[in-house]
Image 1 (tube, rainbow, N blue to C red):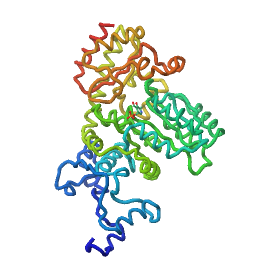
Image 2: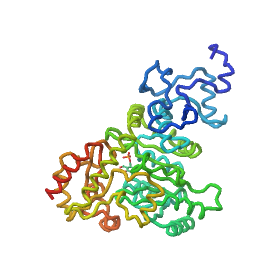
Image 3: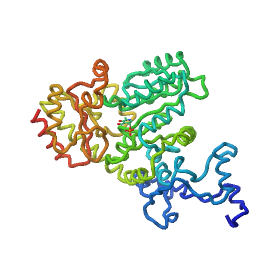
Image 4: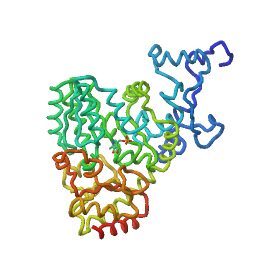
Length: 441
Ligand code: PLP
């Protein structure tokens, strides 16, 4: 404001300066910049922060209005009295500079209009579900899902009268059509929720077929149920489901995006309209990520492509070694799909890399698996994935211990299954570690 008391035209038109540049060039003279380049500076202007090359961590719970008129203008936007929504920064439950820079950069990987970050992957999933479901609705989902997601849909939303129907991750278009038609008959379908590849089976969902089925079965509806997909295992580098027609892509940023096993966070990316709807719920319940974690994620994104590429190359070499080993029954790795099969067809249409998380089926059962795990020296025994270090775990005895035996059997979670997430160490060292551990089996 030019004067302390009188609002200028700039105040009234909302031209209040923002802490960050909203639009930055994504190209140089028509040459489109790649995400890995944009991760170094996109969305941040050093001159707004004393020239600091890197964004400071903005540890504040609230932000100062430049004038009373600017404060009123903000709340007019929040309440819908003025079109265009809220502007600028107000209160840290809603947004903050670190989170906004992070969201601008994160959206680039998926070529998304907008993005939101959350305090965990589950916070992202819960906020998106809350944005869409009402009592009596039906959620259609692929199966299996990450265990906490299944609990959230089946038990917690179930208590609120929400029903669910599922189809197996590898389902065909005809199977998906049939489940959607059954769901439509059972109630209002709130959304179609996917996880691909599924944890821990690595089965891929045909997102293109799901979107086509949704468009056909709900052809008469103007507002069709959105297709939401958890892309934690292959995203954002090796799979970009918005390209296959998904409406919202979800992440546990705790995994590859964070990538150092030192933070917990989540994200949702998609069109501005979809993200605005989710933002209203996030603003209300406060599931946003904190500034410190957002800052750490900004650092992580600078090396995302390097880390994921190296982990993917390492995994290809380790899996090639394991596949031919006499003590190994089978390796469930996306790089080894039967070229003539349906899964390979989905892989070719949806994925650009096989990832670095896979299932190792040893000859034997729990005893052999435990001997293998206990003999590892480089790989750490821990749940989670996508970090710089290699992790290994036993789903049947750990993450999926509470799953009933029949369901475990149906999902292929057997006692001889070891889950491995390969990191960025030296591949020869990892192979030596596996070789040693297999000798102990
Ligand atoms: N989605 C998938 C596929 C996961 O594997 C996980 C965690 O392992 C989550 C979601 C939940 O993420 P977070 O632990 O960050 O809440």
